[in-house]
Image 1 (cartoon, rainbow, N blue to C red):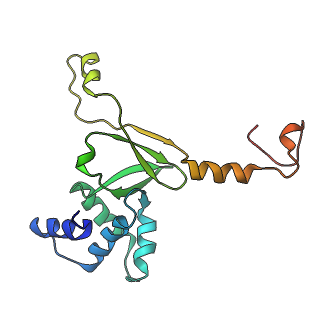
Image 2: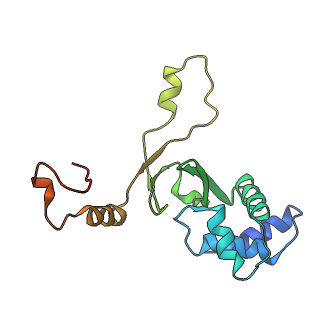
Image 3: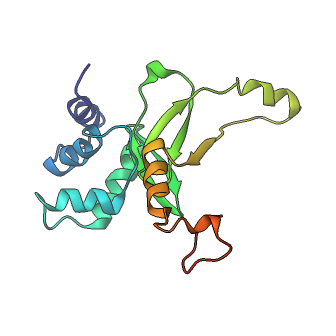
Length: 165
């Protein structure tokens, strides 16, 4: 498989965008962990190690460019925009389960979207967004461990701390 960073930088060059180490390093953040969404702040913190003067605006502007060029895809988690490497086209049309704790994703195949066109006679569907959100098995396990009570107070009528009963 062709390296994501190299292929992306070549594509940017073909479109007339300047090669910069910052852009290459920004893409590498997603190449290292392609299945997890990251916020612009997370990307900025990661890049600040090698590029201490990089601004949030620079990071966000480039992330938006990468989305526009379909190198990255974006979503919204807890009211903030997050980004991840664009899915491999070989997966075909699919949606995602997104872990709201760690940002991990899993592709999910659903029925053909054309079935909805039949219900919307006279309308033209131009795009759609469908995402399943929740906790992945690892984050679910961590959340359950945090809620464990040493006194097993869930069996009691009252306790001094809160639980999801």
